[in-house]
Amino acid sequence: MSARIIDGKAVAEALRGRLAERVSALGFRPGLRVVRVGEDPASGVYVRNKDRAALKAGLDSATIQLPEATGEAELLDLVAKLNADPAVDGILVQLPLPRQIEAVKVLAAIDPAKDVDGFHAMNAGMLATGQRGLVPCTPKGVMHLLAAARIPVAGARAVVLGRSNIVGKPMAALLLAADATVTVVHSRTRDLAHECRRAEILVAAVGRAEMVKGDWIAEGATVIDVGINRLPDGRLVGDVDFAAASQHAAAITPVPGGVGPMTIACLLENTVEAAVARRGVREAG
Ligand code: NDP
Image 1 (cartoon, helix red, strand yellow):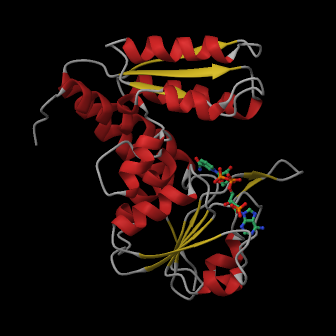
Image 2 (cartoon, rainbow, N blue to C red; image 1 turned 30 degrees about the horizontal axis):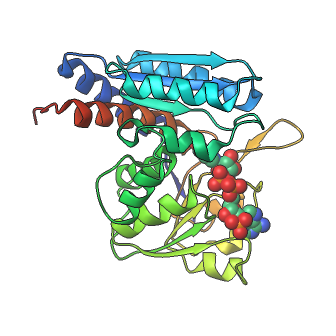
C-alpha cells in the first residue's frame, strides 16, 4: 500500500483564506502582538512567516523585538501593557526565552483571553475540562488536518507519542474531546513499537529524527508527524520514517508541508477567535 499524502500546505491555505473573509466581515482588524526576546535563530524564520501570514489575512500584526539582555520585570511590564491595550486581541511571547527570564512566570502573566498560544494554565485547564478556551496551535492544526482528510476520530484508537505541554498533552485532550480512545506514550513507555502498532491514528511529537519505523505502523493507519528535525546534511525530516511508514499507512503527513503550515494558520484563527470573544462580536452564519 502507498499512503495518501495529507497536504498541510493546501489545508492551511484554505483555512487562511476562510479567515481573511471572516476578518473582512468583522469591520475591524484583530490585533496580534508577537514578543521576541533576543535572536534565537530557529524562531526567526517562524516569526517572519507569522507576520507575513497575519498581515495577508488582514490582521493588525506586529513583532516587538527586545534585546537579549531584557530583564524579567521589563518583559512583564510589556505584557501588562499589552494586556491593557484594547486594540490588542492576541499576545504571543516567542519561546525559548533567555536564561534570566522564567518562561512560566511570563506565560502566567498573559491575559488568558489574549493567550493565542493557549499555553496559560487557565486555557490548559479549560481544554482539560471540556470548556471553550484558546487551544494550542499545533494540536489544533492536527485536528483540522484530520477533519480535512475525512479521518473518522470518534471511537478510533489514537496514540500520541510525546507528552509536552505544547503538543502531546493538548493533542491527547483534543482527541479525547473528539471521542477517540487515547493512549499517550513517552520516554518511559515500555514497548513503544507495540503501543504505536495499535494506533488507528498515530500522532508523533517526540523531536527525534525518523524514530518511528515502518513496522510500528498498523496497516491502514493515519500517521500525523509533528516532528521537525534538521539532519547534519541540512535535510528537514519528521519523527517518522516517511518512506517506510507510507508502505503501511493509509494516510500520512509529510515533513515539511504537513503539520508545520497549520500551526501559523491556527495562530491566526486563535487571534480572530480571541477578538470575537473579547469584543463580544456576533458573526453572521
Ligand atoms: P518536547 O521535547 O517538549 O517533548 C518531547 C516528548 O517526546 C516528551 O514527552 C518526551 O518524553 C518524548 N520523547 C523524547 N524522546 C523519546 C524517546 N526516545 N522515546 C519516547 N518518547 C520520547 O518536544 P515538543 O513536544 O515541543 O516537540 C516535539 C516535536 O514537534 C519537535 O520535533 C518539535 O520541533 C516539533 N514541533 C513542531 C511544531 C510544528 O509547528 N509543526 C510545533 C511544535 C513542535 P518525556 O516526557 O518522557 O521526556
